[in-house]
Length: 482
Image (cartoon, rainbow, N blue to C red):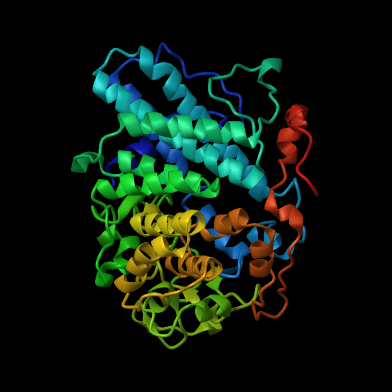
């Protein structure tokens, strides 16, 4: 179901003239908006709309794999290729500038909802639910910002234009505390599920699942376990093996078993606002350029693991009625010889009009979170069951008994990589695992002439955009190395 995204398009036209590229913003006129329950719902839909942007789940997160040993980005415009090769990338580059601005656009819209909706006379249950949705979304934006920049301005109320808006960066610990506060509110005010007309909205399960992810990144292992167990009690589970590829295609979207939260897209509208997963697939018969899987990722899959052929298009395979040959891949930026299959509709001429959703959180991640937390807190014994469920689902044998904590940690990292490839999580896993893992991933051989990865410690925290510093010098000092 794509119901809420139809409203996104309307809101985009309604709010499109607002300058939402940086904070602060004045509020929408109280005389013309924020008067009814429909206004409240539309306002929340406007926050969801940010998630569907190119700078969020339409394109940005899948591109982050291009900084790792999973993928080579064929887009050379001070973007992810430049990050991975540490060239022509600094505080003035578009990637940090645009993502920072887009995340704060989402935060400003959420703050508008949280300021205005409590004063609207409406059904109190709906009111609480909408506030819970807004607080989940604000938490998600701040979580992303904290992972990339560390300390960022924590703005929880609407600002007015003036000196008081030129705030400094807050400590990351304060930002994460605010994220947890928002998620607790969401957990207490969101439903377990929705009727079909509202499929795609945030549920209690999504808030609990995001909470588990935040605790994982904070190495708060017992809290990870508790949050995952709460998600499991809501009835989530793994889909059968034969349905694994469909989770990322229109036929498997919003499933009631494994999918926990998806960003909704409606393609074929002529507006170019569908998903872009076909547009950057790297398959000559589908698109000209793209994001190319590496030989390193191909070799990461065990013998007999069907996820390799569900995730990566190999030379000689038939896809969309054509036998894939890498010869037609964009030679300007090099070719790995592989293309993405996961989440790509087997049909030509879709481009940026895809109908497939962006899967943000699914239950497989929860099991991997649980395995990692059990191993770090209690040792390998408790990690076997969740990780073996992931493996058994695709026909792989259990991990061998008697593994050490270090061996289990390596196995979990490996399983996360192959299970969650191209879902926008691997780069952030590398960030949280630390410089050694990031360096090993970035400096792995990509086997593409003219492209050599280079790790610099400064990549562990992105530069505060120079455009933001020019407006607000209180954002200084800059992150290390920039």
